[in-house]
Length: 187
Length: 187
DNA sequence: CGCCGAGTTGAACTGAATCAAGAAACGTGG
DNA sequence: CCACGTTTCTTGATTCAGTTCAACTCGGCG
Image (tube, rainbow over all chains, first blue to last red; front, top):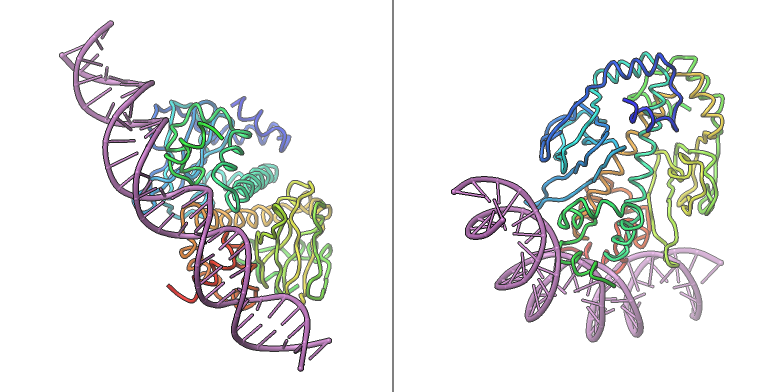
């Protein structure tokens, strides 16, 4: 769990007790490419930390496949809305590369929230980071052109573009694959 | 603070102790229309709960005024990104109606988070709600037409449309005032 | 009364979508 | 390790939703 504890270190200095509690509920997982972590219209039972690999969150709208989020090593992934609300959600989470993960089951996490104030704090801070990220993504979509959105992605997540097929990047940006193809050979 | 405690009741049953702690740091405020709660490029020192009234969060992009969020009685308002990250943000919060508010200062809230596990939990749950709301708004913007976005607003927030000028609603939806004007006299 | 902000309407323009072929690249089995 | 099929990416022509710019209407209210 070293990479995991390293990732959360800036947020909370966990006591040995808290660390042990988290280690106790974490499940070590390894899956091949294309494995579905979360299936459509299910309740997200787990939140995943990516030690290595790459995951995509997507859903279908009018039959079209829309990328909602892309998560790489060091990120958390899951159907956030479903996990937080404990309600089914259309979002699917699928691996784009073979990955090593740590999974945290919702029910067990709840118990730790109860018992360990410091873990509740960790939860609060992780979600806070989530809001900030999402808000930035929202702002970018709100009144920006396709080109601007692409440039922002290049600036913040340049490596993703090598690892994720163009069509998935395009819908992540809210544009069609054809438009993205045209944009990137240049301007 | 009754309306406030009523609003958070579904999330956490606070102990008398916790309630008193929150009451102790809350500031009762009343402001006229057009008052700025948060000024541009400042660090959000407070988060506000709206007992009565209406607030708008907006910012300028390329000189154009863009509505980021609209908040009415029962909602929390502030420059969320700035409040959570304690960094300056371009977002301005301004009252669209005379309002009665409860303000919670960041520094004092931090102390309560430390002392009262249950208040830390409240914080976590409130932010969780925030993510869910923002994600829904994001989804709606991601691959929907102007008409669809307007209809979603009608479905979820119909009353706002009476209270907020058309231009502000339009930029909230990510469209121009002219387009919104055309859309709503029907289709 | 006349002005001023808020909303509407019109006409021309444009960024991006759609539809439709092709060209590359990729990986799987023979 | 080559051949074939599938997936990924590019390119072109056309269409369309929404923007832009500009003028005009309406309802207050000072």
